[in-house]
Length: 129
Image (tube, rainbow, N blue to C red; front, side):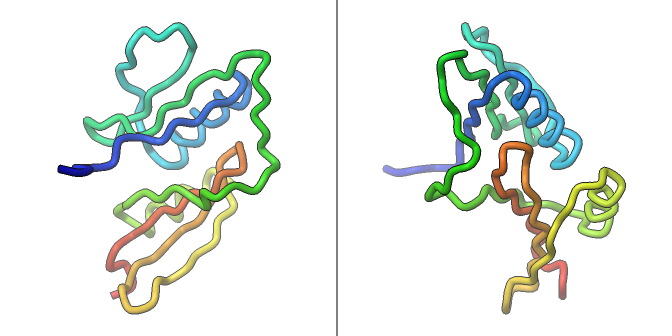
C-alpha cells in the first residue's frame, strides 16, 4: 500500500491575486478550468486532461498569505510537449523565463514565476536529443 499518483497542488490567495494565478495557469501553462464541488469558498479547479491538478482557493479576508517569504517548496513542475511552441507562447505573452538543460537526460526546462512568486518548471523530456 502507498501512493499511486500525484493529487493536486492547492494555492490560496486573496481574490485579486487568485484571478491573476488563474490567468497564469490557464494562459501561460495551458491548464483548463473544470468542474469543482460546491465548496463554501470561491475557487477554481484547473485540469490537465481529465485530472484536476491545481486548486486555486480564495483566502478569507482575515488570512495573511505572505508572498515574500522563503519556504521549503522550491517549485512545481509540469511535463510538457512542444518546447519551441511553448517558448514562443511565453515570448508572445511577455512572460520572462530561464532555460536549463538537465545533464545526461536531454531534458529542457523553461522556468517561469507565477504572480504569487512561485517558481514553475515546464519540463520537456528528451528535448535536447
